[in-house]
Length: 89
Image (cartoon, rainbow, N blue to C red):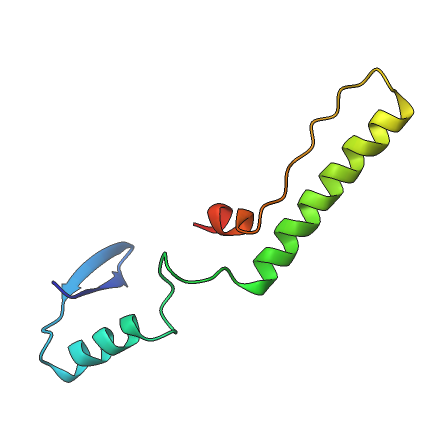
């Protein structure tokens, strides 16, 4: 069932949409286009950059702390190709 959500008078209300109406066809077309953010979609570039930078800084901090104190056991955050995607969703 197609539906849209409208924020009215302080609460979120679900509004059903007929799939054969122009608005319903537009909603279906938008869902199947690249403009819709779904679980299959990619992570925005700005989020990947922030995520990777934070991960690099944490790893560098752990490494420098280990250099200062060889008895310290560093916990490195392993980088994977899709790490940011799991954090985004």
